[in-house]
Image (cartoon, rainbow, N blue to C red; front, top):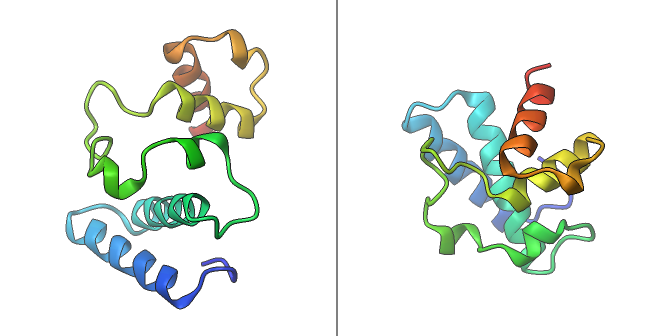
Length: 111
């Protein structure tokens, strides 16, 4: 867990992680989801120095209420995929549609 998290965020992280593990997620996956959730909340509450556009403009994790938690046909939004592609250094991402962004992001995640 990052040093910048306060006690409340550490408790939030542990609560989310344990809940995901109880639902059958692997420890690694639970840790990643919990950290992303806490970091997004921190960004939206102004507790983070660096925040992506999707972290600050998208619905908060509590507002979303699990909308993206199922592995249904929709998955991540185009903005979320774009931010992932930007972090991964995907060239030509600005002219890609959602499916193309998803293909590129998933290719790089599988490496």
